[in-house]
Image (cartoon, rainbow, N blue to C red; front, side, top):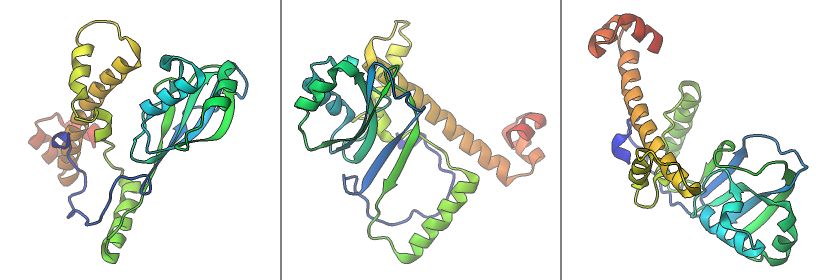
Length: 238
């Protein structure tokens, strides 16, 4: 998927060692809203290691006797990582969960309740932490300087490879579904269509980065000529 990305910073790539493992890659989900603390749905804040969200749901379904479709989640989290995410399930299955959930790869950090289940997209964002090895002192300083610049100027927020499945081509299945005119069936089809939407977004963002670079490096009237855009439009885009 990298071929559709255009990067905002043109410095020489930094040299470091990074392997996506449970010891070096951490993701924490940020809920979209505060849970009500009452209601018919149990909300679990779960920490998992070396386990995909799909596997987590399978384990929870087996422990409770629920169908996988009855277990709510906001988004998929990586397998090769230590991740924290929120899961919902009907409150009446809490006893079965307590009795049968035994795997050491899953730790329930917090419990609360809510009046509605968690659905795909019900998250404000994700908080990431990564551990880099074998990076020189000078490049570490440059990394810090660039990170501060990003805080001011921003950074193109592309969807990453994990959004597009193991072969990075799930968006093609999503495209077929989206253009079929049929009603979506189940969470898997929704995720495939979401992958296609993400692919289109990445293409748009790459074009926008190129556009911004031209506008930033030239006077407004010169940028308008190069882009062959109306001057007033370039002023708005600037």
